[in-house]
Amino acid sequence: MTLHIPFDNSYALLPPQFYTRIDPKPVRTPRLLRFNTALADELGITPGPEAELTEVFSGNRIPDGAAPLAQAYAGHQFGGFNPGLGDGRANLLGEVVDINGHRCDIQLKGAGPTPYSRMGDGRAWMGPVLREYVVSEAMHALGVPTTRALAAVATGEPIYREQGALPGAVLTRVAASHIRVGTFQYFAARRDTDALRALCDHVLQRHYPQADGPDGLLREVAQRQAELVARWLSVGFIHGVMNTDNTTISGETIDYGPCAFLDAYHPQTVFSSIDSQGRYAYDNQINVITWNLAQFATSLLPLMPDQEAAVASFTETVHAVPGIAEAEWLRLFGAKIGLADPSEPDRILINDLLALMAEGRADFTNTFRNLARPEARDQFLDPARFDPWQIRWQARVAQEADWQARMDAANPAFIPRNHRIEQMITAAVADDLAPFHRLLDVLSRPYQDQPEACDLMRPPAPSEAVQQTYCGT
Ligand code: AMP
Ligand code: MG
Image 1 (cartoon, protein in one colour):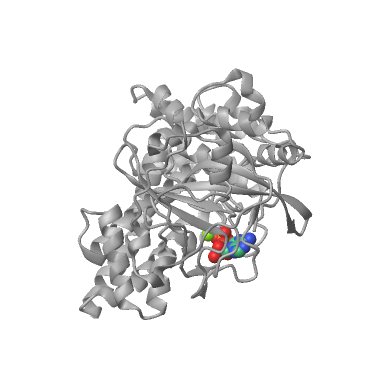
Image 2 (tube, helix red, strand yellow; image 1 turned 90 degrees about the vertical axis):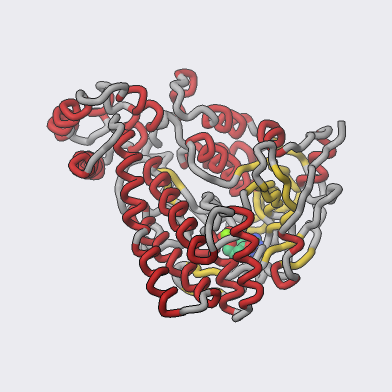
């Protein structure tokens, strides 16, 4: 059997200002670290021998039917607009239509410099590649819309970062598309209305065939992104770099750079080393997605015939975003405490728990998972502070059928904890991939009790705790 990827490319047919055709840059001695056979099956890809997978997913060989390119885009980074970003280290090999009829991008990340690389080397080191592999696959298993990881290949070449020389790697990422808010901003900033219209038509046909024009597109993206952020909050996820170039039109989570999951709960938690203002803190994510969607609305305005009417209608759509996210938040957190149909008074009950958790430095994941078990109160610095809340909650949940099953399906036992990711990377750099494979295995069933993996449920000891995360560029 030889590797076969049934490419069916549509982005490459868009006008030339959308991208630069460029091949991945070959690497010295590629070595396959992992190939996601289950995902390959879903994508209709026939896997070939390891040597062939290694060649193709390192970028050393262009597979039949690929049309490699780097996409152009812009973006607001930490609030400042950069009109010219683009794929500085990514290469879109092409698209496939998966066995469910969904179109998917297949992209190499860390595949060498492009015209959009600016000062960068176009490469990635093994740490962020394995981190993205594990976290994106974990998010998928948690039920959060996300890009996926198809392959990771070590390049055999050193990458130079602040820490010194590090082993290079290439990640193969799969997404419904890599089109972002920043893709629209790129053409809006150039006043290229024809390109903007072509992009809008492409996106409507590809992601939202039921939507009507830019107005309908904005509403769809607003809905998906609001729901996505509510899902992040429900699993304790902090994206860390919610720039508009990292906000997808499909509503998938993208770009696992300085992201991290909460251990001890605190709403203002920030991990990213470059987020000194806390712009992308855990509890600011609904505000930020609303702001990002306002930028999306602005980029769509040139497509609207009546500007005044469009501003009014777009404003209404953007202003509805926090309400959509809060409603989804209530549904998700309601399920986390066992409620099928939570109402506004339940919001108070949930918020009171979160306030106690913040005060008591309770572990986010373990508190919710164990809420009905004696272990719950041990999560709090002062366990007695939890008891009155537990009595209130027991009275409320007693009115519900099947609450225990609902809670077990809403509260993961396993999340990719930061300190475990760091330990996994340290091992991988020393040529031990066992922790990487084990994490992936355990995190593929996050809602199942797995007694043999109870070490992966523990929060970090003070000496293990990760204080900061890095973009990984
Ligand atoms: P990110 O922070 O990963 O979303 O990247 C922001 C921008 O920087 C994008 O245009 C990336 O393509 C670019 N970039 C990040 N890392 C590199 C790198 N090592 N070489 C070239 N461009 C990069
Ligand atoms: Mg990015």
